[in-house]
Amino acid sequence: MTNVQPPSDLSPADQRIVDTLVDAGFDAGAIESPSQEDRARIDAVTRLFELLDDYPVEDGDETLVHATLARIDRHEDSRSARMTFGSSTMDAGPRRRLRLPDFISVAAVILIGASVVWPMATHMRQQSIQAGCDSHLRIVGQALGQYVGDWGAVPTVRTGLYESWRPGTKNTINFNPLMDYDYCDASHLTCPGHEGLFGDSFSYQFQTAGRQPSWGGAKIMVLVGDRNPLIDAVIAGQFMRALTASVNHGGRGQNVLSSDGHTRWLVQPIVGARDNIWLP
Image (cartoon, rainbow, N blue to C red; front, top):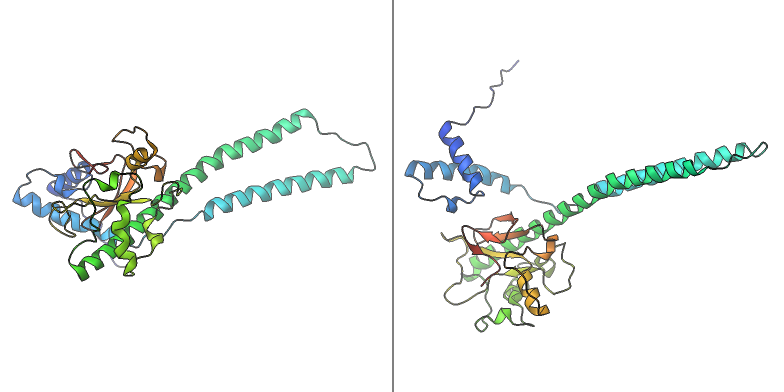
């Protein structure tokens, strides 16, 4: 028999670095003034967690939900069949009528089943949409990386100052070179939770000559994210708070793609201390 060594515990210093990364939302750049030793530990722990990104994320599905609903349908069909069989066997004798308490019992069973299945189905659908959205952003990240490798910069279509905030103008026209040169398909530029009421479902960072991001550079910033609700509000002539979450996920949060190729989920549209991803 082979002796299996138990996993070693983290050293106090490594545990402190992990706790610091958790508090910073796994954003190594948000940790202020680490020492040289802490920086080495931060890099080592970050590389360890980045191994999780090597696993491909497949689009979620609703197989379990459909299977659960089908099982409930079979249960109800079986129950109805038993009741029909019981009635047919008593045709020769006195008929037994269904009483009001019987109907109440059936209704209670249905309500209990619905109260259990419906929240579970809703949660699973939300998780499926969130996973599918993240998967599409990863594909967009791969497309941007390949484009930068071929052309030396992220795709940019020049427009006037604040042109993307004017009704009828899409900032996502910057994505056009990715599709024109077959780096990705138009279907990859949408979130599965987007209803399609306002056009594109992903937002691209506002591009200016002095603020064009460097893909894979030292300064990491959010480049692509879920649909910007503030632009939708401007188009509709409505007021909306700057901290409003994207409509793609029912206001629960938004997926974003950073210039280092990583994706993450933000409950609020804030990166770092005060950087609002919706504002130009």
